[in-house]
Image (tube, rainbow, N blue to C red; front, top):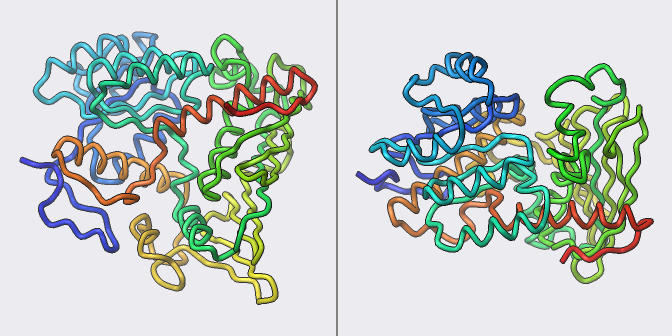
Length: 395
């Protein structure tokens, strides 16, 4: 039986499935809970297996919490990859939500097993590791997604479409920032999810940049349609002493020399989800704010400002409507955005298994190459910061 329904209407919706896909989890922390919730919400995934913790007791506790069959609770990702491939009901994909330093080996294991992957960002800690991973993908028949979830909000997709249609004219500048405040005090320094993010052995050469700066960079490129070519960066520790940066300020250059800025910090009191994107062109500008994610500002010079709100109709394109679940005025947020990512991933995997071709540009979930670009961004920013803010090419 094929997975995709024979009746496919792509006008305003994605195709239905004849069966749910089977999802396994590597790493059982907070982000895994969020992604699992979102995947289940799509009604396209069942979570059936997991290697949730290197601590055996914690692994069992988490598997009970998620109602996993004990036969499919594994002590390691290696055991999971080997055991699942021997099953008739093998997982169709795994989500990898471990600390950064484990991404390379986890991905390699499941690439070799031929199992599709959704890997958290950053893809790896170094460009050389990402290149190594790319070499492993040469004969890979599965689907590889990367967790740049900010690109999966409906109004982000709407912004991308408006810009591609020339609504704001030729882009002349791009600005993006991501401000948070959860590291203002030192009270959380011993929490597991904080400690590894400040440990160079696990987080790599960056902390704030590799965690949220890469989201900001990806968002700017995704919406504008322009690749980042150069940057100069200054890393700072603005709060209590840390081994890695909690703040970074950058000047950017995109294709055709278009300038931009990127600012990220975790010590801006009063900011929680302070991701904001502003793109300006020869005819006008477009602005999106994560904390007001249902709304998109479109400003055409010389005309009244517009605020486009998420929902069906009222300026929302048919392409964007595929990603909308609730009516105008009923908020959607990060869980729904993750749901959109897992929906598009599921459709890609289903089409690959059914050997069915899908229309170009139907799916826009972040793929391996976007993850690779994120690693190059992180490394360029670090290199610039240790060279007194020298301009560094992304390549």
